[in-house]
Image (tube, rainbow, N blue to C red; front, side):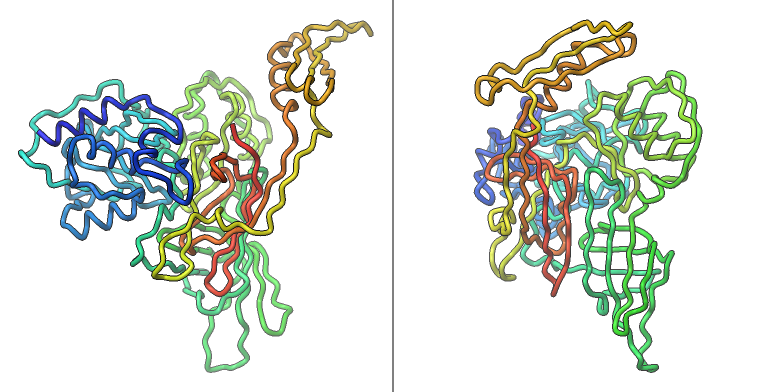
Length: 496
């Protein structure tokens, strides 16, 4: 049965990881690279290997959704229970992702997904706000009677805690259909003020929790023109093909004769302002994080299943300080920010950006970083250390606990050593040496450039951007929209 062939083919790929891979090599390059978000390509490969041409050849979640709707194969969530072999579609809440349904039960459904944390995995999904619906392919031979049981799936403790945002690895644009309206709408206090705002820009960084936005509105001295004047405290919403920013006006400047000027921040701003005291005793990290969010009425976009037990007292700490510390106790490598849906915690390296744009409406999409401008790139070894000596001190007597060296770096750049003093009762010498050497043994690299991406595309700090087949972590992203053109300046650091 053709349906079962697809399921068997997908199941045989579980565990394959990385990019580029055999799926992206099968599909071919996009924008000159085979290192891109591949959740859709994985499913196309499975259908192809099963000898079926009933799935569109595309790398775009949007195109899959449009194809399903145009051909009568789409079933919306809430009105349909999926069948093994159907394709789950997420195209909401900032998430763009697909997966092959393998079974249902327990008010959830099970999938096999490509590019799920950059790997093929079995996953448990829920009928939540990120789910758009299902592509029901026109298989021959009817529907299989076999429902695949929940077998070593990735099962979250609580459906709202599962990190379904990051698993797709796509930005909200995910390659736009040529007919899709690439535009935006801007609201202040519930009023659509798109037509008379100007100098719209916003930025986010890894080092700062909140995304900051600035804009202007035109002033009018004509009493017959009724323009809404935004006020401090107004809620701001920026929509493209989904809501990409929700925040609050924190300052206004109405001194100019022709324009009012505003600064807004997303709700991450509040996480740096409010303080509280907590005591956790062997509580799993995910549960501690959820507890903090519930107490402060913080909506949740996604929290991964972090099982590290937290035993700690926090006294007079801000929300952001407590979250940061809990994530460090989980081993580090995590970041958090705020989306329009709430707090989002994700593993660095799990979110990939794929910015694209069209030069004209009737031309193909171009991978934005191929046409970068104002490039700045430098390398420096001024702060490099390729040897770390860890010592302890007692009664003015120093004892060397360990020395760790990067011999290749020493051969290339010369001997550059750092001495670190530790408290042996609190720190492990080998662990400290490994951590310090990993941090300091690389040449310092700065890399930034400007690019254009579609108006309804959102590349933000914390995502991975592939440039010339090399992955870079976006440290900061500065956006502006001028004359309906979306400009982005990114500051990058090499990842991995």
